[in-house]
Length: 191
Image 1 (cartoon, rainbow, N blue to C red):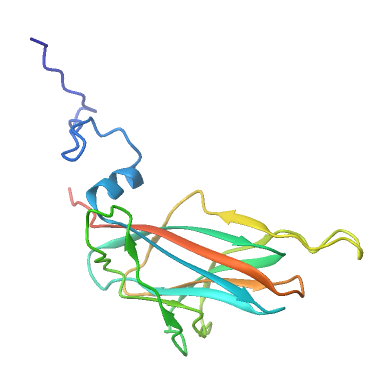
Image 2 (image 1 turned 90 degrees about the vertical axis):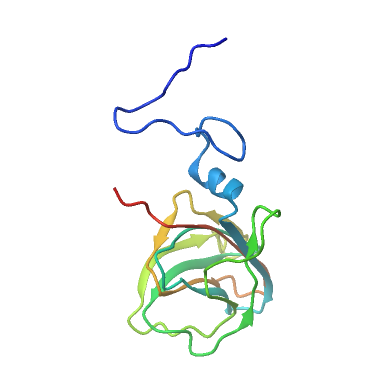
């Protein structure tokens, strides 16, 4: 028979994950997937020259916090922005259904609305991220090319607030764009 061992930082004892029966050493996002509280939504769009593709979402008005990461890919050069908006989009686009990343759980995200290609109301918005994807070409004869932008760090979003990921074509050409949002919904523990 083995000797029981506790792993502790002096205040807390390392937990055994009830789903996998292992010591909780996996990344938190991975753990949230096992717990059924991680969600994904995606949208792919063929856009015309100099137009945009967006996903807008409203975070829940509750104690749940949304921990967001995003992946955007484009066929040609583009500009990507993440906005925090105090006002709702002026026109809601196509509804998108968040899917639970653990398919053994229901698609019951607390994020209230996710819309593709909403008309954004950027009055008094806060730009949280802004980056270029791909290149328009170094010389006039060089072709434009796309690429990908992936957040390596999560954003913990404010409750009951609209957010939008907007990708704008800068190549002057029609192109394919895709936006994938990954998040988990977590209620912080109080001491």
